[in-house]
Length: 445
Image (tube, rainbow, N blue to C red; front, side):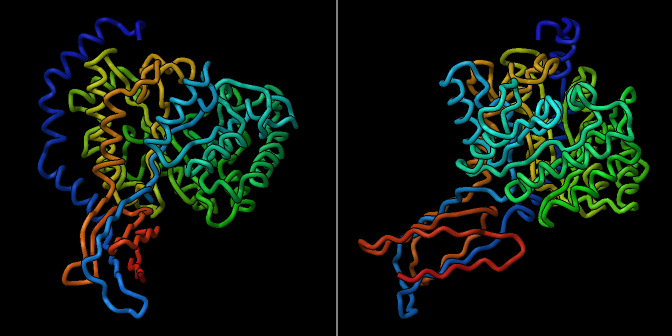
C-alpha cells in the first residue's frame, strides 16, 4: 500500500468525499426497487408445512421453529491459503472466517504448481508444499467436512507466468496431447466430486510470447465435455474488461462465446471477473463514472442472452486509501455490488478472490483486497457481507399452529431445519426449499 502515490490517495479521498453522483446512482429509487424486487422474485419461494398426527388429523397449538442453515446460491472465495499460514492458530482463524461466511470454495488447479515435473502431480496430501497451492485432495477433504461446494480453477489458461509448467514444450503441435491428458487425468480423479470447473480462463487476455495451439479453447471444452458428467458446470471464465469493453453483441467476449458455441463447444456457464486492479478505474468508480448500476445491469443483460448460468467468478475491491476510511469504502462498494448481483436471475454464484490481506499473488497485495486484515481480524466489508448472507438473506420463523395445522411462509432457497414441539414431544426435520417446484412438507407426530 505504501507504494501508492500520495496524489492518488488525495484524489481518492476528495472523490469519495464529493461522491454525490455515486450516492445518487445507488440510491436511485428505481435501482433500489429493481434490486429489491429481483431478490424477492429470484431468490425466494413459497413453502407450506403441514403438521398432523399419525391418523392425519390436524395438530393445533404446535410450536414451530424454522431456520435456514444453508443457501442454494453459492457464496465463496478462493481457498488457496488453506494450511498456508505460519501457525496453527492462524490457520484455525482463517478456516473459521471462511466457513462462517461462505458455502463454496475455489480449489487451485494451476498446471505449473500442480505438475512441477512432468508426471509428478501434486494431487495428494503429503505432496511438496507450495505457497498458495495446497494439494487438491486436502482442500476437497476440507470442503466435504465443512459442507462447502468445491469449484476447480482452472483446467486451461494461456498464461506463461502462472500456468505453463517449466517443462512444457514450445512446439504447439506437442502441446495439445498434453492438454488433453491433463483434462482427462483431473476428470478421472475429481469428476464425480467436483461439479463446477473453470475450463478455460482469460482467453482474451492471452500470452502472445507463448501461444497455445490454435482453437485451444474449443478443444478444451470438447475434451472436458467428453470426460466430465453431464451435470458438471463447465465454465468459460473471463477477465474484468468484460464490464468496461461493452459494445453490445460486438463485445469481444460475446463474440468469443458465439464463435465457440458455433463450433460445438459445450459451454455450460460463464464466469465474469470483477477485479479493481486499476487506480484510475477505482477513482472513476468512486466518482460515479464507472461500474455503475446501469453498466452492470446492461452487461448482465447482454450475457444472459446465451441462457447460461453466470458466476461472478473473482472479485477484488481494494482498501484505498489504507486505513479506516478505505475500509469503509470497501464495505460500501461490497454491499452495493453483492446486492445487485444477488438480485439478478442468471447469476448463480459470487466468488470473492483473496479472503485475507497479505495472502494474494505477488503484486496484488498492494490493493488490500481481502475481507480480513493481515492479522486475520475482520474488516467492515466482512461484517457487512456476513450481515447480508447470514442475516438479511436467511429465513427464520417462530410461530404456532393455532386455527390451522398449516404454516406457510416465503423464504430464501436453501436447506432448512424445522423444530416442532407439542407438549413434551419434539421432532426436528431437515428440508429444502427448491426453486421451480411446489414446496410442501407434511410432518406426522
